[in-house]
Length: 353
Image (cartoon, rainbow, N blue to C red; front, side, top):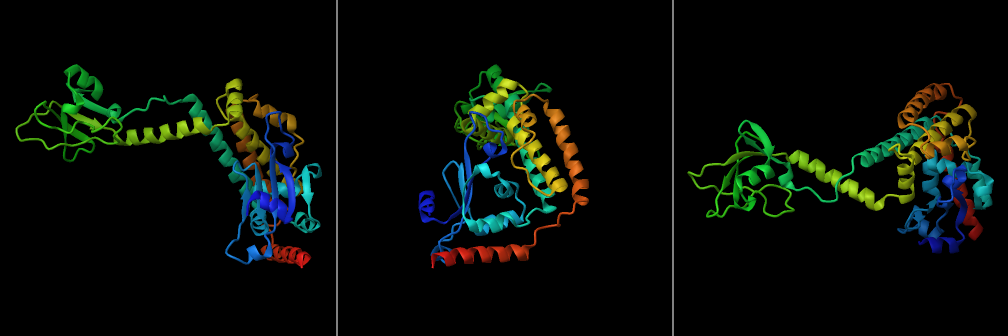
């Protein structure tokens, strides 16, 4: 079922604006995210064609099938719970049957862990961006030869420098591994002997070894830092994929405030921790933020990364005490969630009969 088919089916039971606009944290550059819930047509639900989620390619619009939606609610998934508590002004459509779901007591002490785990993910993202900004990787990719070193006259020098000093072409070299010395090779050089070269091709991912005739004398002892090369290749791939896929508006914001961290991720970290605290203290989830100005200042990079990190750590520690003393249930009543699922689905299908 496509998104267009879903909209024409009449099986959407709830649809709302979510994300930054629902939080009251939107700016002129903000996208409009849509989230919703649908019930599959009976013939699809009882067939091999079950679909638990329908979205557009960019995932700006996502609809969850009833079973998946209630399952995520029962796990106290932060993004899903927000759908239940979104302000009425952001509700685009609501079937009367959805009221039973909106008033169900899903909030529990599981929120402490689910929100904390989510904030940890956001902090990791912010840290990851910091590393990428502070440590950019050149577009020109390094090769195996850049991670090779030669022991020469009591010191280590780069292989490329060694070959240059000796006026030797790597293609005329042959390598022979040194027993019991991981990553170490004797280097042999000859124009007459058809050695394979230190690397077969410029983009090779490993060194090449050759058959060395008896009596040949090595011109040097080489070490290939294969682990270092593998780590570099991984970071190179991650960095340039990030450059290709990064949100340019967000990146420009990061460059503008010059704090070298993803301030939007940190804003959501603080927001989620504050929401988790409010759930423990008030027993409700405040989607639209009363602390809008503060959170937007976080997004604009007004505060230092370390200060925000310390604040986040303090709030996470505070949550333990708050949830321990909270009157919230330990978890949603799964039996009652199942009853709700059966009741809502049965009632909806009966409307089509």
